[in-house]
Image (cartoon, rainbow, N blue to C red):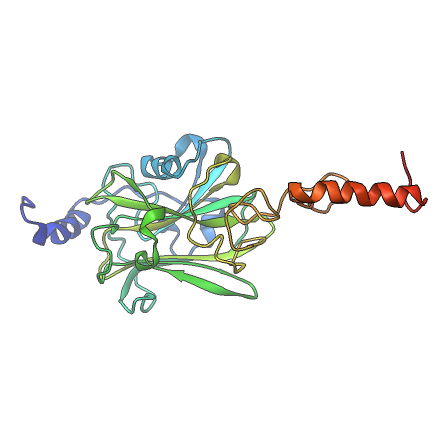
Length: 283
């Protein structure tokens, strides 16, 4: 059967998912707690599926040491260049845009082993933006309102494209996830059970000084997994571009305070004046 018309692309993708049975990835580690472990993968740096590696590279990452969590509406270890698999699992109600969902999976009470970066990808982007096929990604946490996301809430200027079909796949950085925070994650298709979406959790050390705009960090609200959010993504202040607090100074365990350069002379003058009156000790 040849898919010669765009009108039949989704039908052909669905038939392919029925008659070509993909190899399953058996989840280990945190994926054992997923509602559907066959939709969760935990990969070390040397075994990343190609689409996962390319998604990280597209957002300025450099593959280092550590592991990546993949929670997806499809096959986490998908090794080909088409991210579209019907897993035969049920949905979980309507997505944020009001559309029925399919292949919905949760991973609750996940705490990353190290500070990490949460990315999302969807093979619906950009072809099915503003349609019924908008998928569903959720990050939730104790005492904080959950963040429900579809591709309709993505900012196009923040999305990178990787060459994975059925058409193309969009990748976006959501925010940073602290290793001191526990989060609940969800991924689901909407409209039908093909053209997959995924949440990737990768070590923050892989991203170094990458300055890709994020969807959540910088919005002025502390979202699940974030340590701070000062309304911008400037790393040269008290909250960095991935919403992590600056590193400890190694003395009292508190973060190093940020002082604008313009304030330094005044601070020096103040300390000098206090020292002159014996109010502070001079070394």
